[in-house]
Length: 49
Image (tube, rainbow, N blue to C red; front, side, top):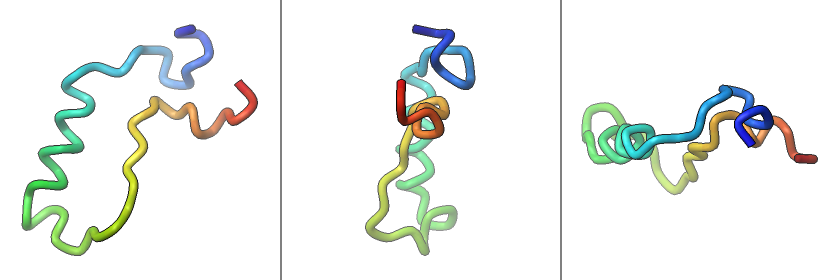
């Protein structure tokens, strides 16, 4: 499975936590509204997998 992920590694809890921290930071994400953040190691780039 790792070979199919463009970044060649599994996502970790820390990878997800960084997105949570970003979204909860008023200064960093103040203008971000109504979006999805994909934390998939680049799998979106390989839709036929």
